[in-house]
Length: 260
Image 1 (cartoon, helix red, strand yellow):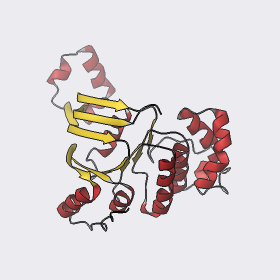
Image 2 (cartoon, helix red, strand yellow; image 1 turned 60 degrees about the horizontal axis):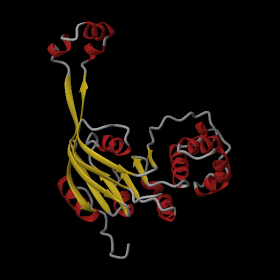
Image 3 (cartoon, rainbow, N blue to C red; image 1 turned 120 degrees about the vertical axis):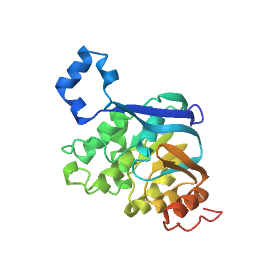
């Protein structure tokens, strides 16, 4: 990696139109195409503000927890960070070579074996077939799947697939790793082990979107609280979690000690 990874967002907005069910009919879509003025008269077409005025600076050496209720805009923000979406307004500066977005909703051919997934997913992330072949045993061992790696994925649990995808990602040189709702509290011990590997491989920034405040607290040192597409609070993870749990009357995880 030739430079220090960072992502900076300034006053970023993202909006997109939502159509009523009637507007999704082929007949009505054809009329809108043939009669362009018609869409300006259709009251059912409304822009949805997914993100509003986002200002963030994500720097190397930090792990960020992205928290908030369903529909707060967490997944949308991760897609902005990764470059999948481009903002409707505002500016974003991305400085990295390799960035991976890990989501449990990834489209995966469940007919593949775990071994085939290692090869294909690694090549998708930019590695060669030869390099990934040499990493198979290491990845299977770290993901705790050595006895299952030749089985088809449809016999894997969601947690097993998540561990495998995550391990493939951290087995490669990653500047930034984005994780969207892929962590369960049952995998916390595995995530601690994975975080140490991430640091050893010099991955510089990790952003985790999660509803599990214990995961957020134990794995991250910075917090970002989103609500209705707006950043409500950001900063030290303990301070952000204090504000969040106070508003929603959640249990506050035990505070991190200074040497954690």
